[in-house]
Image 1 (cartoon, one colour):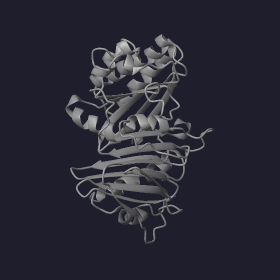
Image 2 (cartoon, helix red, strand yellow):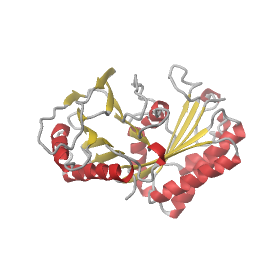
Image 3 (cartoon, one colour):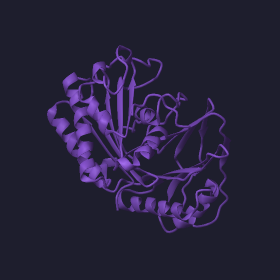
Image 4 (cartoon, rainbow, N blue to C red):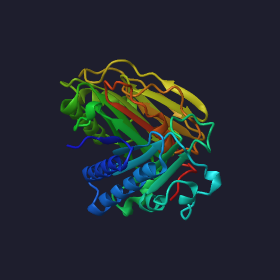
Amino acid sequence: MLPSCLFAEIPIEDMASATVARRVAGELAMLLGFPQNRQAEAVLVTSELAHNHVMHHTVHGLIRLSGFYAASIPCLAIASLDQGPGFDPAAGVLHRKNLAGCGLGAGMGTVLRLSDRLDIFSHMARPDMQSPYETIIAALLGPARQANEEIIRIGGSLAILSQSRGGSDWGGGDGVHVQRDGRYTRITMVDSLGLGKGAAEITGLVFAELDRHALFWPPANLLEEVEFALAETNGAAVHVLLFDQVKGLLFSAGIGNIATLISLDGELIKETDRSGILGHAKWRKITGQEYKVLAGVRVSMHTDGQKRIADLSADFTLSPAVISQILFEPLTPQRDDATLVTWQWPEKSTNHYT
């Protein structure tokens, strides 16, 4: 049984730490089931981004690796983060042939070529945007080029970061389950009680119950079903989002400590879930919210190991891949798993280079 999310952060200070980042990227790609050639390409992308930190003497350079599953497609996000010196995209347009001309390093052409999707953020170019990082380079890789278009779409609409407390091999009790078809998108966040294997097994039970029910099920009714599936377990906090693309409706329901922020047509909505957990094995009426989406919506959900988010950018020219890197901030010292999901519709970001 694999954890639902895989995660690693490697501060890049010298060539030795860059080598560590390469090795970890290869291991995560292998765990995600990437074929050997794609594992090698994930290693190469990570190597180029890490070497960029070393060669340009960046301030607090960091490689953040995140593996997750989106609609059964394994995804590996490789992010390069730093606090300076930054670059000015106005000094050279970020096209395929002159990425290196912007001060990002000659290896950026390789990163662009091997990534299914590449998102770049420069605080120098966007001083209005609150960000702990001067530069963010977020590469997304899938297992095969056959899934390229789907991976590009996932990268433009969805990002997941999940760090287990103590780096448990089981991924802890946090989990994210993403299901899609031509009409519906269902995103479920789970924070199971307990630690390690036991908590991971509870999260797996929730995922199995979700798979048993068609996507059109209203989230509130679905949670009532999950309640019984978790009988005789420690239980879990669960929040379900369901988006109906045809009707432009977003449904939301949850029980427990999961925080949900919604930027809906320019309005910020902070949902507060009913306290408690699912798993009492007795029926109770669960209610949810319904929202009409006219122009666009962005949602961030996070468990209580993540610092509470006060605001959520409604600027859709920044993809979830970038926004999630800006917002992700596990509490310190880390006493619980920290998971953050950012999703938006429609996918219309303008800062990806493919």
